[in-house]
Length: 155
Image (tube, rainbow, N blue to C red; front, side, top):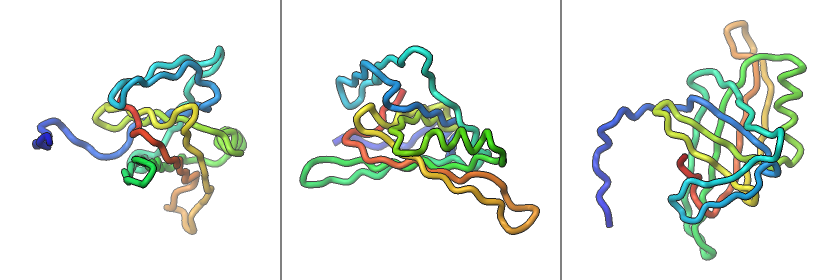
């Protein structure tokens, strides 16, 4: 068993950047070991889409459970995207409808994790709201969730 020593680096919380891509846009996905960085290619014309989140709202959680069939990793990424117009609604809705998604989450320490694979993916839900008063936030609360058999890969 290895020791878990004190982390002597800057260790901020919170998310800095979120990027999404449809899992069907990824080909040639390979992750030979649990600790390996995956290699993959994207179909021509496809790229990750960045989702701006209000600072202080983007968060990442990962829960590990052991089952009779092996380890499971339940991931949830939540955030708030401000604003209200037809283009924002259309862009967020393009990720709905049972779309299989992969997410690249980068935290404030610069650490990136790639969550999901072409086979084990995340799904997006979102809810628009204005709040009840002028100082409230107006925009979209969203959540990406999925269950994986390996933890998200560090990149």
